[in-house]
Image 1 (tube, rainbow, N blue to C red):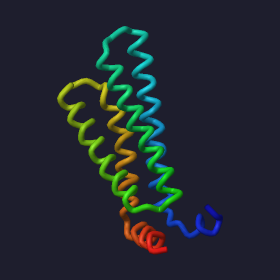
Image 2: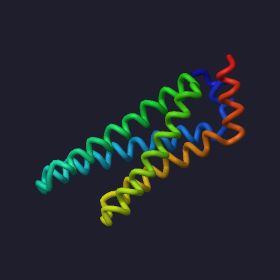
Image 3: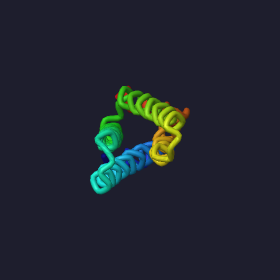
Length: 135
């Protein structure tokens, strides 16, 4: 990406990308800590599965945000927004149903990604994506 294209990018798009990548990286870190903690404590296989799922979701966030930064694809933006919404809803349900603080930290991290989705759909961001998509 050239410096000129970077300057024309609205701050909302830049912050949306930053929040998605941050959320993805933190989800990966939480997943690794969950897996390592489970192996050390010998809790059970379900916690390892939860950690692996967090790693997969976080890696997907980072991959899609990087693809969006390069390609300016509206479909990638939509899929990131929907994925972050679904992850927040699932983590909220898991936190409420399990009544344990295990899902509270990933929920807060996933909310960062959801806030990035809100920024990506601001009017300034919409105009930028439409302009880039039309080229």
